[in-house]
Length: 363
Image: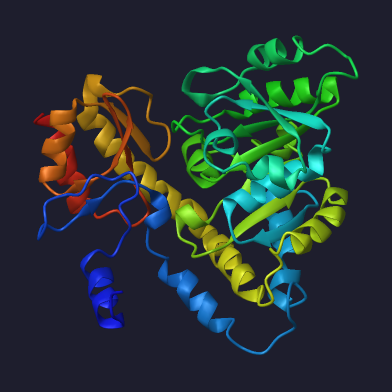
């Protein structure tokens, strides 16, 4: 067994697990573009956490947690109930549990995060609800694609019946739903009596691209619950579950506790959300990430697989070309055969972005 000193040296030598990442040459500084999850915490968020480090009521009874409803209601221009949670998976799954019973089903895209990257958590948190998978270019759903799934389900006690629709904005391929596109799905959801959830892990990036109000692309377009992401955008460990029907939050507070997600020092999570909302920091950091992605997109040219509308860039690259980029110190994910994914963050170094853009253009 390795000694503590040996373990510490190993951690120092390799400070980030290379899950799904081929190793790059040793002694070369890594320029990381594999995930905005790994971005630094914004200094203002760190300051807010430090300021919250004082005695207060536990769980969600502190003054910071109690202020979330009001702050988020002001942001969205309508009464909301806002609950902090420590992860996007928790936000998504608690929202879906509020919208769908255990015997029901949720329509989502075949490549949705809740389908491919949450380890069965949606089914776990809903106590067995089924995911109905729909198609759509760029991981975007359309009313027609959703209706194709719904119309294939007989109204029969032997079949799982749909109860909700879930979309991701920005999508898993960096595509952005416009307010009109969301509203079209919202109209369908209301017409069919279905709940409507938006996975907003990169909601800030979408709003920054659209230039619209947060309300226009959520509750005004029919969304019932939003998983408002902050971790990818400058927070440390806080996401916000926003219910545009506050009544939906009542039972979710019990589910959050039962799931072990009601942290005893919740004020540290609330502090992060509030810091990101102050002076629209959440939009400033998203704009920075989007601008850096646009630089890479311009270099990508006809290698681009999807239009770059947020902070993700998908490129065609042979294994040899990917290896050449890694040899220069760039880290990123191999997404599919002949495809790579590059993700920029609020703190992506402009020099690194420029160097990667030059390297892509030179392939």
